[in-house]
Amino acid sequence: MRSCYGQGRPLRAAIQTCCLAAFLFFGYDQGNFGGILQNPEWLKTFDYPDETTTGIIMSSYCIGALISCAVNFYIGDLFGRRRMMWLAMAFIVCGATLQTSAYTISHLIVGRIICGIGTGIDSSTVPMYQSELCEKEKRGRLVSWEVLFIGVGVVVAYWIDFGFSYLSGSVSWRTPIALQLVFAIVVVVLVWGLPESPRWLANRGREQEAVEVLCAVFDRTPNDPFIMEQVLEIREAISVERHAGAQKISGLFKNDRVKTRRRVILAWFMLFMNQLSGINIIIAYIPTVLVKSVGIDPKIATVMAGCVVVLFCIGALVPSLRLDHMGRRPAMMWGSAGLGICMMMVSILLSFHKRSTSIGAAAFFFLFMFVFGVSINAVPWVYGPEILPLVARTRGTAISVSSHWLWNFFILMITPTLLARLDWKTYLIFMATNFSFVPIVYFFYPETSNISLEQIDKLFIDAETDDGSMEAGEAGIGQSGKGGTDTKIEERQISSSRGKAQAS
Image (cartoon, rainbow, N blue to C red; front, side, top):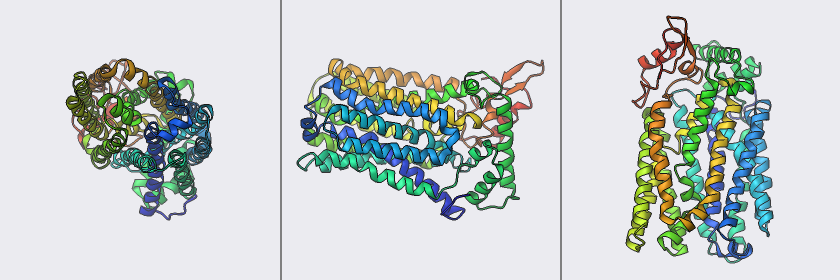
């Protein structure tokens, strides 16, 4: 087992630091171009691109990320978590270099596509790796810290863009892009000393190595009851899932005993909700929106954009500390309702076409970012990897993350045109989508807080009823109105495969 960081707490800290650095880059790359779009030197270099061209430049990044989902789908289980992170950083270094040296739009787009491939692999692999190397009681919080660092990266990007905007020449926009290389190099160095995921090792038949990793991460001996319980659960999960055929590509789309198809759809739709909340109108285009819709000076708009994203980070602190207590379902439901109200108020206030009401709309952009940070920002990234069966986790995560990048591409592509043609009516679209997510989460998504990855199988596994028929044991849906999952509820959920199942 490779580890340069000792064992126990130092090793867990190194794992978390590496994952945070990877998602800090993710956020930096997401926010970087939003602050550059209004840079006079960038506009001059690329001959003042129109709305359609701007949409193509911005969304080309997502094409690369979509390609990466296919890459991860086919080779993720072969390479493992660590090597996939290295591969991601290799693409990022190549893409960042091409973008930094670009003088034509086609050159820039190629660089963004390649960088997108790296970011897509990064975003598919890192949450999975973290989820498989932490205790069930801390899983939500630890993965939420990664998502918080997306916001930190976006904030860093906006303020770096703002600072460099005062310089003359192309260095004012090339340097912020080139700084992506720093994040990539840091991640490469950190990954070198980390162990492989014990779940991946066990799934590849390397159980002894998996035990060594678990012992090192939790600083225990192989005979410790905690380690023995973890190994037994992993073994049982692999056995049940393979018997159901979940490890096969075709098994991802079958309604098998562990409900793999349904779980993949749930994970995919979680990230659909993340994107159709309207977040990328703000993350990618907020300086442009503030200039064109609200009528603010470009320099002030860049400052305000940085402040808007700071609120996002403040909001993201809440799930980073409390998500396992809050629960996945409540956070998604009240978060969606809050975002819908924000979008409704933005539409109403912008519809008056007065500066005073437009400033009020800007205030609701701030509130939107705070609510998003508290809720829909974090939950989908936590929920996706944990809801999927172990033997299908790599491919299932690749499919679910493809939703993020597909709809990210769609939103980035159409936003300039929507804002130019619909103006304030654009926000009504996202008002409707956010409100629709509340009943969807209530009726279809089970609670997964404080349940081990292997025990989550038993929320979905078929259980034989008294009359011999088979029903889905999807306990947790009707019982999860509360944030956390108490011991009695968890026991009922886990025993559902032995008694009569609770249908949702």
